[in-house]
Structures are given as C-alpha cells and as structure tokens.
Length: 233
Length: 366
Image 1 (cartoon, chains in turn green, cyan):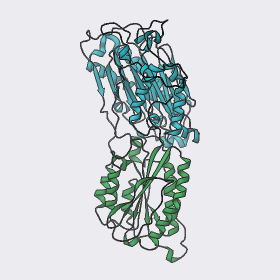
Image 2: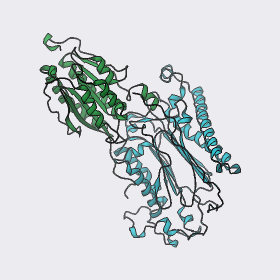
Image 3: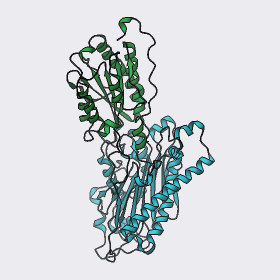
Image 4: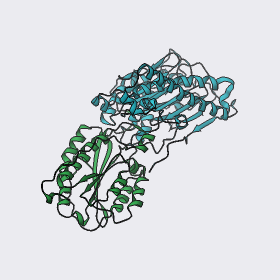
C-alpha cells in the first residue's frame, strides 16, 4: 500500500561560495583559491555521504567589477565541478551579497531546507555599497539564519567587513596568508562547517538570534611558518 | 492512534527519541517512553473529552534533557486540558467569548508553571553537573526545552494549542483539510519557539472552535520530522486526506499495522529526525448507523481487508457524505462509541471561536 502523502526527500542544504576575483587576486591567490576549492570537493562528498538525510547543493558567486553567478544552479555535491576563476577588475562585494539575497528569498527556498552555508573569500575591501547590500541579505530570513563564514586572503583584507558579514562576534574571519593556509581553511569551511549544518538540532528563536545558527567546531590554527617569503600574501 | 519513531540520524549518533506523545481517551492514558518506538492501537473512546498531545525536544548541546522536557510537556498538557475542560463545561462558560479566552490564557500560564515545577523536581532529584550549570546559565528549563502541540476534543468544542514547530490538520466529513493554527514564517532552518523561552505562555498559539456534524471528523497531529521528510509541503495536506481515505477504505486496523513502517521509512529516506504522528477520528461504524453487531458491509460500505496488496477499486470507495442518514435524522457525532449528544445546533445562541494566532514572538535580529 502506498504510504500517505507524496514523495520523500532529504532536506536541502545550500552551500554557496562567494569568491573575490578582483585584479588584486591575480597570480598565486586566484590559483590557490581555484585549487583549494577543487580539492575540497571530494571531502565535501565524504561529509555528504556521512549525512544521508541532507542533500548538499553547491553553487558559487564570483565578484570583480560586477557580481555574477559563477555556477548558478544548485548542484548536488556528487555532480559539482569547479570552474576556474580568473582575476580582473575591482571588488563589487556588495553586489555579490545583493545577488545572493535575491536567491535566498523565501519564495525561492523550501521551508524544510537546512540552514544555508555561505563562505565569503576576499583579499581586499568592497568598492561598492557593501553595508546596504549586507543589510538586504540579513533582512531575508534565510540570509539571517545562514551560517556565514569568511576567509581573508592576504594581509590587505578589510577584516571589519568580513566580521560584519559573519555577524556573530564569537566567530572571527579566518586569516589565510599563504596557499597552504587557504587550503586549510577552505577545507575546514567545506567539511567541518558543512558537517555541523547537515544535522543541526532544533534551537529556540531566542538562541538563534544571539549566536550562530549552527554550533561550529573551532577552525584549525594557522600554519606557523610559510615555506618562503614568496609564499606570503 | 499514534506512533513515534526515533530519528534515523539519532539512531546513527546514539541520541534517544526526543519526541513525546500522549493520548488520553478517558479509559486510559497512553504515552511514549523516551527511547523506544511507541505504538498505540486503534482505540474507541468511551466518552469525550479526548486529547492528543505531541512534543519535540530540541536536542542541541544546551538542551541536554529535552527528551525529559518533551515528556513533561505532554503530561502537563494533559493536566491542563483536564482543568480547562471542567472550567469551560460548567455553566456553558464556553459560550462566552471573553470568558473562554481568559480561561485559555489562564490554562497556558498554569501549564508553563507546572512544567517548570516538574523540571525543578527533576533537577532536585538529578542535579546538574558544573558543566551543565554553565550551559544553562541559571535557567534550568533551557536543558529541557521542547515544543508542544495538542488538541482537546469535547462534546461542543475543540481546543487546539501549539508552541513551536509541528503541524495540526483538521479534516471535515467531506475530506476538506484545514490548519486551525497558522504557521509562523520565522520557524525555518531548525528554529522554533519553545516552552523554555521567557514569556512562553504568550508565545503559544491557540484556537477554540465549535464542533459541528461535519467537523472535526479527523484530526492529524505531527512533529516537524514528518513534514520535513516530504519533498513538497503540499504533501502534508495530501497525507491528511490519504489517511482519512484509508480509514474509510481499509479501516483503522490497516493504518495500525502500517503506521510504524511508514514513519520508519520516512525518517530514513527523508528528514532523519524523530517522527511522531497521531490521529483522532470519528468512529465510521457509528457514523453510518451500524449497530454493534453490524459491519460496514451491511451498510454497503466496502472496506478492503487488512494486509491486502491490491488497491481498492475506486468505485467502491465511499465518502462519508454519501453514507450519512438524511438530514434531520439523528446520528452519533461523537468519536467512537460515545453516547448520543445533541446533533443540531439550533439551540446554540452563539458561535464561539477564539484564537490567538498572532502570538508574541521574538523580534527578528539583524
């Protein structure tokens, strides 16, 4: 006998990369970013396999002089392939958040979805109206309830902006000063954070307004020493 | 009937079932244990009122005793329902809108307080460790955090209460589905309102509605693990309709047999969460005028036998409206084997319906 109701499905978990590909990212930074995300994918698949009730759907926004959906379709992680980014232009970070906010509108998100994970990677400061666009994102219920992580690439990043994006003072931006650290932090964001978001327990609305929506493990410590001076951004 | 299954993800990580369920049908109270599947057979209520309460413990690190909290919630809910039933039954108090609202508000305050008292007793009996004390920061009720949803069906009215996530469906005789309590748009991404929050009584949503010959005909309550297992939200309403159809075409015994299997499949293939579902429904045999010795078939109601693999021929499906006696003929409108009660409402002078649908909720924080 057919069970009452309709088709069963795992709960969708949207994992979204927001990647700075402005001109200052040219060279080893963009190369390291592309490599790190590509190398994280198999580990994300492992996490997804260990959390059979979450359907991990991955996509990406890139931003330079403008923001675009670099990979626009929410893609099941077992099918997700990274397309390399090229660096050019300035840093329309605000536009990236505005683009993201449109897709996190309640009309486009199923109510049964797990908290989305948003990972912002940048080496500089926004050159557009970041504050207004961040507000637009946080004003969306799904934007507010998303797990927001930020990784600073190099020493010139505006950390305050990244902290504002995260929105919870207990979670700091991760500082990646070389390719090994970037790989390290992207691995953590794409596995530990994904794991925590895949099976979150219920929380009261009061708790969720005071702390991050999902309990995260501590990020890994930074590498103590770069191998050469050329490795440091 | 009701059934509660432990979530597939909880099976994996060793957590207990944090849902609780209580079905009070007068002659007995059936409730869940905390860490095993519970299953209650099709029960004919000897008399009204009957009540069904579900609760879902939160399960995060701070809510480390939520499986006890959910159990306390349904127990205190039952006590609260008993008290309000006697208060609103006396002197037809339920006919007075303002008075009914006062009584419900008072009931909710008392429910929260009694839940808190249960918690204090539990902490006395089983004190927190120092680490646990740090987690709850002088608010022991946080450790027991739970949602609560429930329905109290009496002869004249039905009371619905809900704090937090989960769903209550009402179906009328013709299968029309409604939800007496509006869902909050803020309760997404695993966030919920809770018994452990400050001013919890003010956050409870409720509705008090008159009964009629047509409604409620079937009530379906479920914790959020149920809805979260479906791909489409519309499947919840479809499920309500399907359950009612099954009651008429295959009988409650069939659902009895399959319900645990269905819920187990759903947590495995869907949400991974604990799932609890309860049904209250009118006795079909009584509604079509069967005497105790008669069967539904004697009244031309075709019902497939339990365990059949063949789908019932749709032409043999019977809608209750097609089987009802003609207008004006008295029929039992009770839930299963209850003595006759007035079936017309001409003597009623006021249609009482109170709601608190816009309860106080925490403000959105940027």
